[in-house]
Image 1: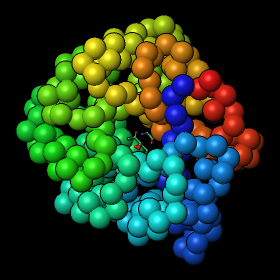
Image 2: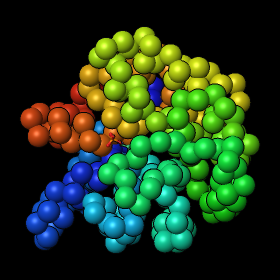
Image 3: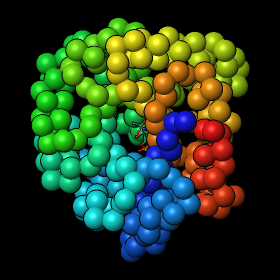
Image 4: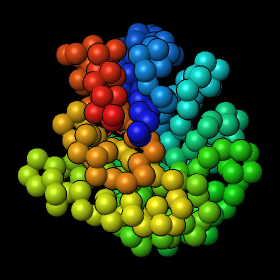
Length: 237
Ligand SMILES: CC(=O)[C@@H](O)[C@H](O)COP(=O)(O)O
Ligand SMILES: NCC(=O)COP(=O)(O)O
């Protein structure tokens, strides 16, 4: 069964909209864990428009499930991850001005750069995952870097799901098969939701973890956080 890591960026976005500390991201992270989340994901960006670097330091002290820090590995991010030593770091090639992540790495073009980072983080005992599109060549390129896992960028799947779910999932099955064959661990995330999650996890072999933020927090507005996390966990059974 794939594990659920809740991305709490959106909680920080809400807090930042007013200053102050409401909602309290540390409390929400602990509540997510209490309600059954098996991991907490944060994605600090250089402008700190949602999760702040100081939040990451506070969260590290209290999170008892898997702590996953995602982001573009600029110097400040590398320093943060080195200091915090989460269970997992996910390397994402965000442009500074991106509203949200919108592509995986070109693992062939950036092989050396990624290999150096993978070695650096693995030497600290941090599991490394590389964010990639569902593309066989990118999965094979990721393997060359020595990464432990890849995270498949699922936005294209989510976007096509309603129209044609078989076509939407086909490249993801192919990428997953390649990852499994190469011995790469497999995570997935972006725009996964109560609508599209079950079909994804039922069809993707070897899926270890999904990180979900936007849709889950939106659902929680109507359904409550505890109930929502339970519903997502049910989809992963
Ligand atoms: C890598 C990925 O797909 C997610 O981390 C996504 O970028 C969430 O970040 P936002 O909450 O800023 O959209
Ligand atoms: N890695 C994906 C993630 O953490 C959450 O993405 P989203 O559910 O907010 O699109």
